[in-house]
Every structure is written in C-alpha cells, then in structure tokens.
Image (cartoon, rainbow, N blue to C red; front, side, top):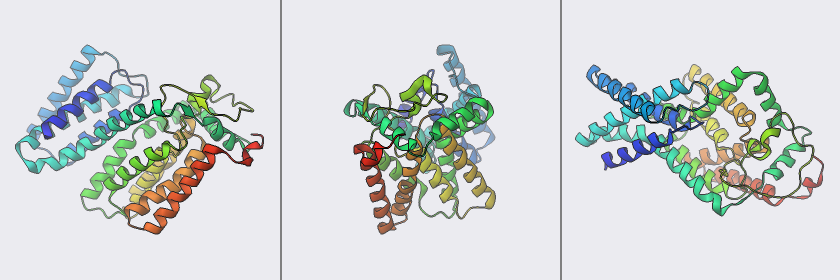
Length: 341
C-alpha cells in the first residue's frame, strides 16, 4: 500500500511540474526533503537521496526542459527533486518496516493534499459556471478605494517585494510541514495542526460553493492593477477554466492558523510566523488572487476552524455562522450594493 501510494504521488507530482507557472506543488514536495533531513539520516542514505534527486532532475530536464516562469524557479525545482527523492527513500524504507510509515505519511501528506485539492477545484467548475466577483469588487469599493489594486501597484514598482511575497504565498505547504514537524517533536500547540489544516481545507472547499469567485486578476485581466473600473454591473459572470477559490481566502486563514499555532513556541518562531502572515496577506491582494473582503471573511473562518479543533464548540458554531452570513450576504446582495463604488 505504501509503495502504491508513493508511486501515484511521485508520478502525478512529476507530471504536474510540467511547465507550471506556480510552485505550490514544488514547495509541498520540498517539505518531504525537510522531513527527511530533519530525521538525521545516515551518510549513505543522504548519498542515495542525492543520486536519486540528480537522476530525477536529469530525466525531467531531458524530457520537459521547462522550469516555469516564476522567481527562483530553478532553485525551487532543484530542491523539489530532492523532495521527490526523499519520498522514494521513505517509501522504500516503509516497504521494509512499518516503523518508517509515519515519516512517509508526513512527507507525502502535503503533495497528496495539493493534488486532491486541484482535482476537486477543477471538477467543481462545471457545477459552478457563474462567479460573483463583481459583487465582491463593488463591496470593496464601498471603502472608496480598491485595496487589491493599490497593493498590486506597489508590486509593480517594487519587483523585490512582489517576488518575495509570491514565494512566501507559494511556500504555504512548506510552512505547514514545518508546523507539523514542531508538533510531532513535542511542541505544545492550541490544536493538532494536522487536523486543523485538514478541517480548514474541507470546510473552505464547502464554503467556496456558496459564493463562487476567482479573484480580480482573472476577472479584470489587463486592467489589474493600474486601471480599476470606476463602476461595474451588479451581476454574476460566466467564466471557464478558473478555480472558484477566492472567498474565504484559505491562504489567509491558513497563515493565521500557522501564526496562532506558534503561540507557545519561542519568540523567534512567533516572529517568523508573523512575518509569514503579513507577507501572505500582502500577496493575496497584490497578486490579484483575492479581494479585501475575502481576507475579512477569512478571519472568522480561521476562528471557527481553530475553535472546532480545540473543542470550543460554541465559539466554533458562532464563527461559522458569521462566515455563512457573510457569504450569503455577498452572494445575494443587499441594498448597500446600490451605493456607488
């Protein structure tokens, strides 16, 4: 079973690397290398892993010759090949001893979750042909400005900030793996992070279906971020081949949960988690993947997830109800939308 699951993950991951412009999957695979080397393998095992990584890299370059068009793509993919090799080594060891099954599951969890999430989002597009981005855009406009467009212009004039935020935004799976490692090594946390991230993913996917949206960069294309429309029609749109994963912003929710999970950690760990949260929030807006209201709804959503996993049922129900009210309100609209943006 371990070998079959491992082969499926390896080949699917290798296939999805093909020319991808986003390194989410690559960072999730890098997490496997972190888990592997955190276990302090022997020199022989390290050498075997390095040889396997080199072979995978050569095979990939020889057949695909594409590393993607994002910052530091070569470095990220090189580290990802090391992660693929680590999963192979873990898989071989798990086939020989059940004692090695736990690190294998930890190493393959994030890549498998990424693959399943992508498949689920793609499968639901045909059932949710309409998106309500213009409703979210109009609601943001009630502030008198469009914050996602403003942060997008910051990114346009500061490539360093844009690239840093992009890489942090994409490194979410790796950050989750680091939190898992801290937890399994005995670090006290408000809730089991593995259960926390799974609950957040499943609940977020369900909430996506209430108010489907995809983000300003996909809706407004060339107008983002320099030319925010002064007025948009109050109607839904039909968009094809774009995932409906804008509201609530799971990136923001997960980054919040990572920060909250470090509550009992050392101060430098909390500061790193806080920096990760800030850069993630900037990235969600500046990259055009989310509206400001997506981040607002992500806060009670994260509270609901943490409360549910910490067995604080009343708080979880109240926070989840608040999320539901927001989504229904934004989906169907209320008289406040009659105000000009």
